[in-house]
Image (cartoon, rainbow, N blue to C red; front, top):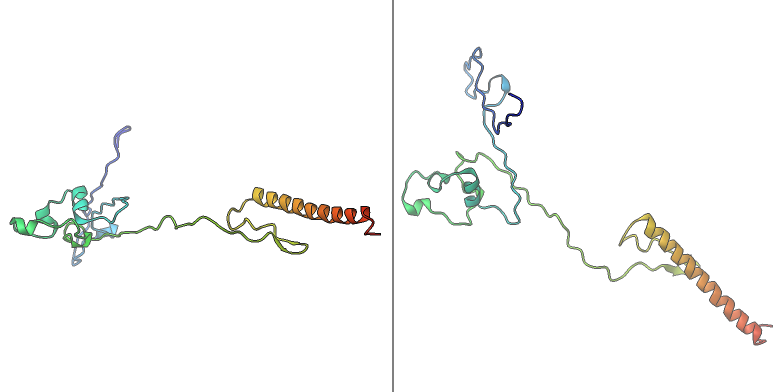
Length: 168
């Protein structure tokens, strides 16, 4: 192929001149296949229907479902006909993959308790919502602040009792 030329969309082959078909009916020869396949990826938010596929592949309605008659009642089809209804002479096989790409997620309304019991803290309460080193370190910093706040309030209570003369 000369430099700068376009890459072909299909490469067609035949049996080499020195290969005899013999008694084989499949005629695959040394390549071990004897077919021309066209692969088309289609991304669609809705399931594909036969009329959409026929437009892509250029199959007219009269031939699409294997009808040889040209009467309009036989050539017309409804928009809800499936791809499997198309004649096997036009589409030998197809595979339809239905993706469930995004799960339904609902906003969090509750989180795990940070304080599980006196002097027992759970610093990973945000892990089910967001899991990063930064949030874990912020959670640890917040727990340290809560512990300090508890100590200060206990100290202030004891100091108040001492100043009032009750703690003597």
